[in-house]
Image (cartoon, rainbow, N blue to C red; front, side):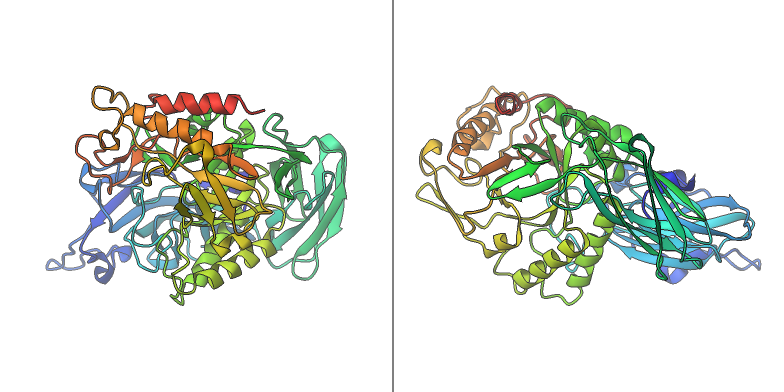
Length: 569
């Protein structure tokens, strides 16, 4: 169900006992059963009693030094008390677990989930008992060729129960889902629906927005779905005025409250248009990491820290790379007036020929959209990043995924991020036909870092396979160690701030040559942990492309982008 915070919730966050299982022996030993010795000769080679304790939500890599680079199985256990009530149902909801999760309640399997960045839940009404109950979760963050993402990626593979865990109690029939947003192209008409779950699916429902005197009534059909459509003089949400309304959705058996903003996002010709007005997307890439802790960002406080840094830079958009971030990030961005780009981890070397991939991609897409479809801050769904046209089945798989995304949410922009452009004779050739599936052309290019300039930045030329679409520079930049000044400043090998600053100065000159440029997005806000960055002096396990160091120190490039964003109105 969506909008968990509005439900009858009992948090299971806090201390969980854990068993670290690098050999994977807990599976055949059936750890979830927690067997106890019955005879003097009985013993078992595992126990949650006396085991280490980890905080949930949180990754296990940053909490125990011996797990810093660990990729494997950890068993988590939490006890909770419950007293069953007649006519009540109980659900166990996880914000996310990275990457595989097997969930057991009182020794009985409740379900499994694959994917490290989207929510899931299981009904456990018949599995709980009065009094103490035992919840055991097997977590494995191992990499898989058929995983999303796959075997290789440029960030630390934080494992564990990384987001909130809640018990949710409902009546027999409850409001499971709803869509209360403006219809595409409209500034005053909501077109949506309400979905019930339970045995009493035919009910009267009411959608209330008291501030606007909206009291819309409808009746659900035999599937529990009620269509919703009404008009009002909304004060539209925008970065300059992040207005949200208190919205109440009521059925005969349940009530849910939400804070919802209303806005329109479209592409008209080669322009991105918000609420009927053209805008330039002043963005920055963000990983879901608290730089000061070197840990997975999981709390509202973490979200505010990251988003405040983006606001100070002058951003109106954050690209949440390369996976859906936690719900706090979306809601805090919406409060602060930051537009959001949300992305599923279809990343680089995905094996699109694998028969299991289409259903996995669709599942992650639906979980991402389902959670956040009422969050007006999200203006872009990104369905892939840096995939390669030579990969068998890529074009067909991503075209089908695009169709599915449009079918479940037609009111936002869709893109695919591509880095397969040719750069010859100081000319960019954006030839990849996957751009035909996107509303905006999103290009990752690192000219000046991975690829040298072939001419003056201000003389760069462009050819585009889809010249009618707006162009967004979704990644650019280079690495620098903060404070590194006392070495040659004109050589990339020394990771100097001056070299990074020159890349940014040249890039800004080049931006003036880009046809129909609708925005830019530096890679990235903070230096972040990445095991593949192995230079022992300058990197030390960090990608140093941040505009800010992992301690929050501003590099020279930060001031260059700040000035550039200030110059754009």
